[in-house]
Length: 135
Image 1: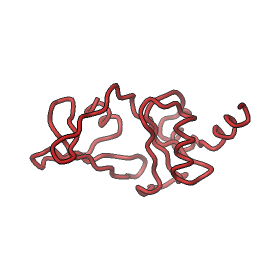
Image 2: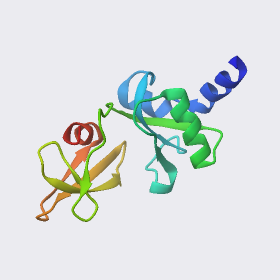
Image 3: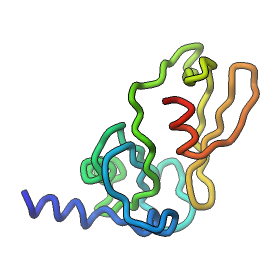
Image 4: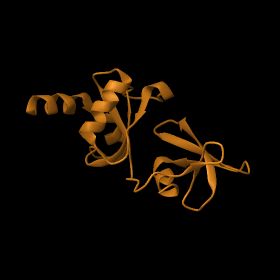
């Protein structure tokens, strides 16, 4: 078991995360990974784990999903206590009670999200802001 865990840990690279946050990733939560060491990844090069996953398990899923022996940790999203409600033509209900369409937008150093309410008003927010809005 130790050999397997060591292999998974060696496949998870912290370069991107350390540049953005000044420390290695650790713990549990919702994790985002990419196969790109630097630069802006496309949607096909990004994997987002399920909520409440430890880093090693999320990395293993990312390697499998992205078909790569190495993945780079990008972001950690705060744990979500319960899944947001989906209604009104696939829109997600925020904790404010409003419904939003959510689109992922890769940017220079991180991933941002464009959220559009049911009236067409939109804003671009970070991963952390997204987690807080739909907690």
